[in-house]
Length: 275
Length: 301
Image 1 (cartoon, rainbow over the protein chains, first blue to last red):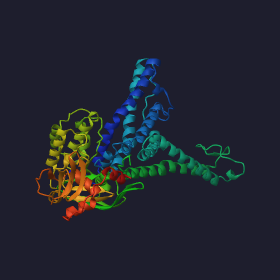
Image 2 (cartoon, chains in turn yellow, purple):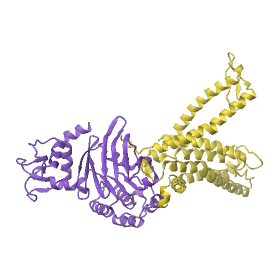
Image 3 (cartoon, rainbow over the protein chains, first blue to last red):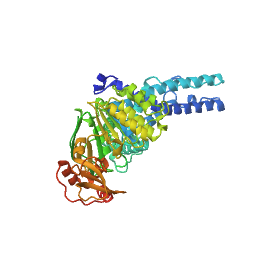
């Protein structure tokens, strides 16, 4: 980095350098995770001549397995774990060093966001696909079918990535806010938020379904079918509730988490625990 | 220049600085002294930008540290009392983190690494406390930053390393650089620091230049304090170690020496009015020794 770059209020070069630092710090843990997945599947091959992950999940579209695949699930979980630990350094002894590392708070947040939301799923999907193909080849050589090679492309995977990005952003904000067991505390806050939203949804459902106001009726389920008292909601009410839920899940919540997390990183101070 | 104006800062209800103001000029090594909990580390962190003032302002070379602009951060180094280091070798550390500082002088670092006898590839987290400290100091001195903030830099260093550290710091000084050293080990650095800043009760109690100390104060070892213009005195094996006004006999008298910084510091806490009077060259009244341990407890409570 040169002196001109240093004066920029936001530098992509610094973001890249920060991502490089993150990569070196997190690569061992991610590598261990990948080795465990590979080991489990190799164990399956040795014991049952079956690459377990290639035979699990719900499959869509002739071999291009996406939804419900353990490969996607593992990446989702791995990304959430990574997001939960993204700002761990802030809360540790090295917090002051991390705060004073010559890059702006926005750059530090951006590097974590890009790593967790973009780089990890892309690189992870590529590695998982290769691993899946390799395991299928080995299984084929052992006389098995090889199962379905995980090929994460198509519109469906983009939707999955959208859901992952929304959740990962929330866990990033959790990591910026909480020190120890950030993942657990984030889940706690998310559940509390979900409870509030469910209550709000009940109110919305009742508002759009006057029959819901009848004495004695209760909300028996609040799944994606949006039934009330055992009866399906009107089409209009269902569309409205779905739109509100989508707006909250993919718009309001991640946007709030993004700005909240960034603000938390910006305001973090190198205070000593002793004080 | 670093300027601090009407600084207020505290932790929760505990107020640490109450309207403190201070100016630090380039080309000098400032010694920051104070009792435990006086706020020395917090002041360094405030100047670095790791802490944000409650109110008041801090500017370092025309920028506000708390805004944490990359250029400001790259122009400042804060070396903590117990520096954090990752479990990687020194070379890997520099290739990851020194790239954020365009002015980092790798040759200078290498020279300092050799002078401090630091192993090249041993994981930093496996170094001893003193070695970690030397690594952090070498990186700080080679950083090219104009503002160096060192928290207890001589703690944990062996005697040759302290000498090396003093030499390295002297060599690293330039007309545009400001070094602030927070320390309890004043004797390790007393030939280096000028001026001395003494923090007490949330404010800057004294700013003493080497000239003030040399012209106004002297240390004296005496069996009796009679007839001396004593600012502050402490009993020792021979009688008394006393800080006296410069008018007490000729320099070079038996038991006479340049003002000892530890005595000056203790005098600033125990006898601030007498010290201020001595620095103004005013006559001092009769002296009655105070119990420093009791004073320390009083201040901490």
